[in-house]
Image (cartoon, rainbow, N blue to C red):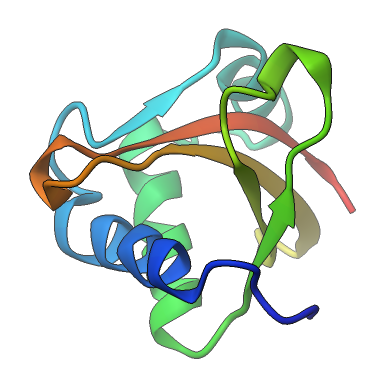
Length: 116
């Protein structure tokens, strides 16, 4: 993992995922991402997938903070990637983060999920 460009933002992302990830509106899905999960991971719910993300991070799984350069997402400073095992597969989970001054106003957006 490359050193994060903004350690504070990465820590806030981590806190939002771990502390608020189970609550509605703190982690939201782009339709394409959840469509892939629904089609590829039989019986997987959005809630359970987020719980798997939380468990991965709690066990020391890394979150990569990548400076965002793509035009469609440039209003986000970074995207945050998790490379985690799920149901015997190695998945790449790309997320964006709406980082706000108040942690309770922050949102994680699951943008893409695919086999790594």
